[in-house]
Length: 183
Ligand code: SF4
Image 1: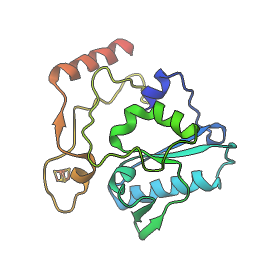
Image 2: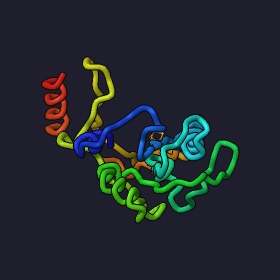
Image 3: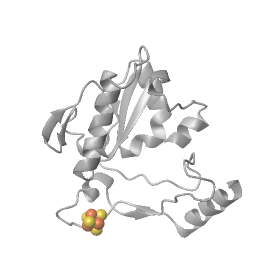
């Protein structure tokens, strides 16, 4: 997602009070991560921790949006159902590559809160997917597969991340070579 923002020439800041758009990227796997995601959404929506910039938009991305898409803005928190505060748009896992047009639409005030959600997810990045490294020069993550086909009853991953799919060996090797060349 950051790779797409950088490619479009958008600047990023760690200071939320400077941002035209705040994106909270959520996890929804275990209770602790859900709690952390909910705290971040509340903090960014009511400006407790930071003064919000006038007209600032809030986008919630990631697994929490994907998992609770049918019920949003209500989600199942660690202590039961909670209604999220005002969010301008939720985006699902397959919409990360569309983050730039999503932002333009949200900034224009034309976006529906849940219009950027799809029931299932099939996305997996390729060697030419824009990326912006957040790790030190000597290390980088490469995603080689996504999703899961197993039905373990205690695990929500298959329902959030979709059916298992793998990248080709050629694609992974090409990305590894690119990362080495950039290091
Ligand atoms: S193998 Fe089971 S525990 Fe592991 S991700 Fe798949 S469903 Fe979850």
